[in-house]
Length: 198
Image (cartoon, rainbow, N blue to C red; front, top):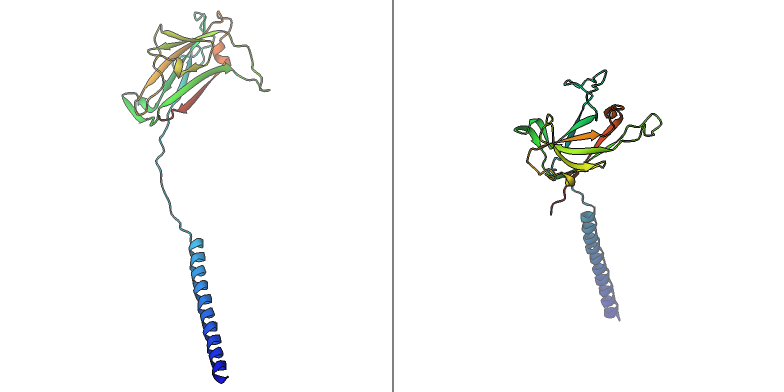
């Protein structure tokens, strides 16, 4: 019986040691796994983003060469007009661009009556025609739209292509028979959108 008791005692000690070893091993395993789960890494990454450039300039027929409003207005201009210049680069000229758009661009030009202090349109827009012209001084051009927003899709040249410096000139003529200088009462808005690559 003594030997059986000794054997039971040995088995109990062995089981106790085995249990302690298992607990230690489990603690280490879960502790390492938990530590790996909580591990955080700090770092930084950079990504190059393409610059989209699409700019618009407006010159009214009621302005002189330096941009000052002609007063009194030039009565020889029966239908007032604006020259709208759209370009896809920063810099002096196409031949010497500082920075060129790095993405294809579609654009839309909207013309709306200016709003008064209450946010209401100040007058009713007269009919108007859009012409694509070769330069700001051109006497004639190609009629491309009538009384609608000008979009690059209605232009004969389409949209701007990336890394190609281009300038487009448009003339918007207001058909109001000279009753008032409409060009002082309208706002132009250019909306440019990056073309999704195919």
